[in-house]
Amino acid sequence: MAAVASVVMLGGTFTAAGLALADARSDLATLSAVGARPWTWQAVAAGQALFIAGFGAPLGLLAGLVPGFALTLQRDVQMGRWREVGLNGVPIERSEAVLAVPWPVFLAVGLVLPLAAALIAALSARTKVTLTRRIA
Image 1 (spheres, rainbow, N blue to C red):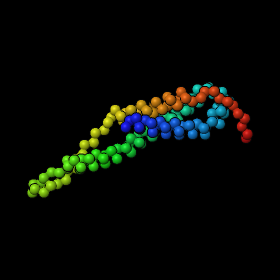
Image 2: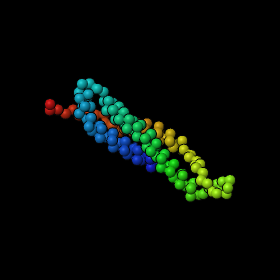
Image 3: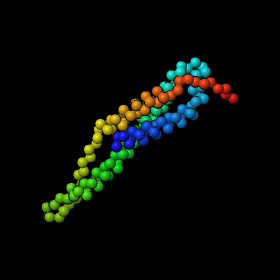
Image 4: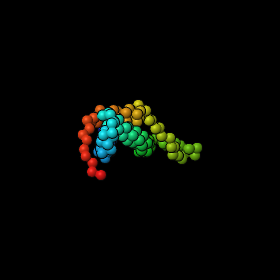
């Protein structure tokens, strides 16, 4: 499950960061023309990837809790764990589902993956800037 989340998150992050970098190309060229260092492109790419993945990962994890809890409730109902006999012999429903959160996976997807996305984006961003003429 963590591998699928990683592939989906990295794919979405790099797609969005690539589109944002393409949109900011003229601004970065202007920065380079006025003396910005070549690693400015890498810093911008890493920042955009970290921002996108840093907000997307927690939202995805929170959104995944709802169906995870629903599946846990459904499994407990199917296994008959909720039946108890009351004082008068009538079965009563008991709503006691155990929700076990896989914390190592949460930490890997929520913290490590956004940092890895930023590092990969910084390493893959180009540093050589080709200046173009801009028509005002």
